[in-house]
Image (cartoon, rainbow, N blue to C red):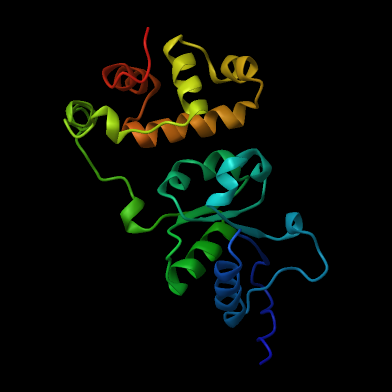
Length: 207
């Protein structure tokens, strides 16, 4: 069965996800709505790039793309602003066709698109972080950091900037930013100081 032709005026989309099954499903949804990749052009020339969690291992490779749609982990909700030069969307891997299309069109228009489950809850100015930090659910066994995240947390505890931490670790500054945002997500905090305090309380870092 032939696919509908690309609709003039709609953004071009490149699908770069690791799962062949997911890629096929995404491409079918896009094609049915008249969204296609630019014929004969590399991924970098598409208006919107769709990625999945496989790219979390090397977020630097995504830097500077015009618009980005990420499918999978909720960690993406904190990353695309630092990775995309334009709009972005962070959606679950089980996003509905309507959510996927909204994400693609919103990102192409320069907007930030998040499903309701990933939107930050409105909270009073002070108690939110304090309640999270005092939450007994945050036992050491509940927070699992990668070796590199532990390295970054240790450097945060030393008061190093992202640029200095990147130099010490031999990675790019954007990679350090990625790990810092992942730490915030895992530790349930919103700042470097609280990340360090939380890490110390959980025995993940010593000073």
